[in-house]
Length: 166
Image (cartoon, rainbow, N blue to C red; front, side):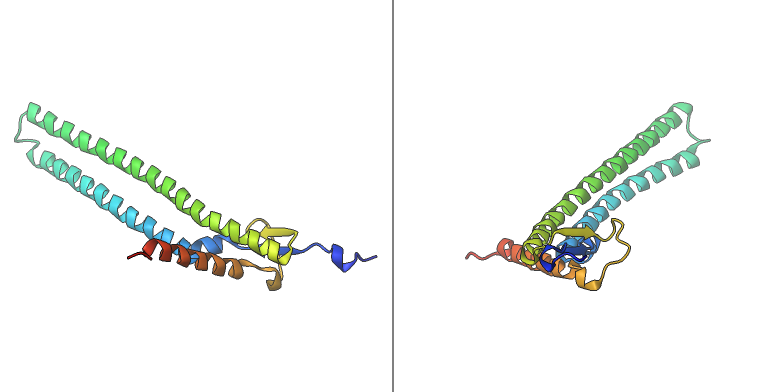
């Protein structure tokens, strides 16, 4: 016995990771992350170079300088190493926090667009592709549609921020 057409379950699938990685707002967030990563990397590289120079000095002067001077240099090296460790840890924490924040911004937009599609198409269920969907017909996939909406929304936000006043 088949159910009447009006009581059929309306299902769609979406690939949220694809939208996060390929949408314009997702790409913009990734570029901001990469730019900040490069800034942090330069700072860390600079500290590493300072530590390397101190170590070279110690190695060159080990036999020539007294124990007191050697101890001072080794303490300076240890201080640089500690600064480097702290800077690296802080950088990692910042990058994780920033990634979470930027991902949340894009996800908010995705959720709003999914809600709009759900209402427009009167969907009963939307499944995330990566959450165990083994197969779904392409006709059920709303990923591109939602990504287009997210991109349009991102472009509108950029125009508002970019200027409209004189």
